[in-house]
Length: 93
Image (cartoon, helix red, strand yellow):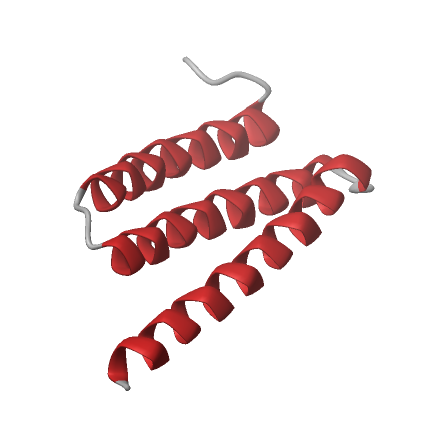
């Protein structure tokens, strides 16, 4: 019984994360300002990271957790670089 509940919960979470990624991608493409697009990109990578974590929980393989960690680190650095570019017009001083 608990395996069925776990499978159902992981499947529902994956569907909701895919829907959230679709909404974030729409905002990335039609965002009225650059700030909206950066926030949508930030949301997109967080959702992608969580989707990989749910894949890892569903399959029990550790490679998904490592990939989620890499996406989290690279996404954070990308968000900081883009925010700095918007504030000052340059990334490297």
